Structure formats: C-alpha cells, structure tokens
Length: 240
Image (cartoon, rainbow, N blue to C red):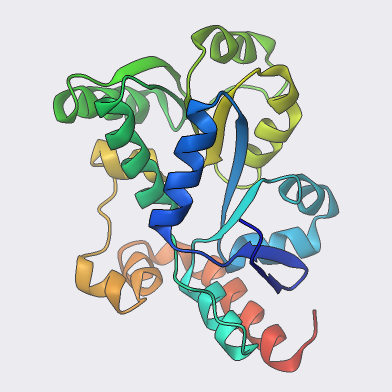
C-alpha cells in the first residue's frame, strides 16, 4: 500500500479496512513484522508537540485514520481518505481471524482486573483462540521481563493497550527485539471488551459522532476534545 494523504506532516494510508486487514494478515502469515498506529486528531497534535513521540510514530508501517476528525481534515484538504478505520474494529477483526486460523495473540495493557476480565470474555467468545499470553499495563517501560515474556510467547498479533504515548514508545523501543509479529497500539479497547466501558451505538458511529458519545459518557475527557477542535482550526488556517 503506497497511496497516502499527508495531514499535518503525517502520512495516512488511503485505504479501507478490508484491504488493510488482508495485507496485515498476509504479512503476518509470512512471518513479517508490522507496526500499526491508529491515529486520531489527539495523536496528530501530540506528534506535533512532542518530537520524540512524532519520531516514534513515523516508524509505523501503517498509519491509519482512527478518528472522524482526521477524515474530515482530509476532505477539507480536498484529498479525501477512503474511510475511517477504527482501531477497535481492526483489533476485533484480527482476533476473529486468529481464532479461525490457528494464529496466536498477546494482550498487553490495562489494569490487572480489566485485563483478566477481558481474557475471560475472549475465552467465552472464542474458545478456540490461541492466547499466547497477557499482562496488565502497570509496569515500567524498561522492564525487560515483560519484553522477554512477549518474545517467548511468539505471538502473531500483539495488542498493546498502554495508552498514548506509552504504547507507541514501548513498541518502537522493543520492535527490533522480535523476529515476527504485528504490533498495534489500541488504547482503551481492552476496557470495551471487558465491559468496563461501552462503545457508542452503531448509529453514533455511522454518523461519525462516536467522539461526542464518549464525551457525554465520560465528561472528564473534555480537555482531549479541545485538542480535536484545535486540530481542525489548524487545518482550516493551514497553521501546521
């Protein structure tokens, strides 16, 4: 995949979820490594403000638009992205595929309680899923035991839910230590599977209002929403 749209210095893949998943799965089954960043406006703004983080995410093999604000920005630039690709859906689709094709998954992140409940839920939903390992996200990024555990697991898919920017920093710091695997930062997705947080109803998602639903349900997120508005204002004024 080479077709990209540059938004505030970041090259987003201009593709759809089906094509993306097909390529990721092919690479993984061939034993190749992949690093995926699911970027929304907050991540784009953080990359602009935090040079170390910007450098980290530029190492990604796939930068996908997980955020209606990014898709809106592409339309405002008259270079429309094909569609929004939610990171949560990428994760669940890959889990579904892994369960049916004898591929293994490692789940790193969230609190111990949430992580354990998510694993129980996945076992219930996918009894055949090969869970190579799992660990909560409350550890120091320098912890080599965690790295060794993930390496030893030989997981095909590694889902990292450490939050931004920790998850991308962890992946880029240790990616070279792995021989294979797809690594993706998926934020609070474990909380949704565990039932800790409810995802927006389909109609909100289809209307690109998932961000508003989350704000209503979690009003403490208002400062993060301000970054979305700043992002859009910078796109409008071309102040990158």
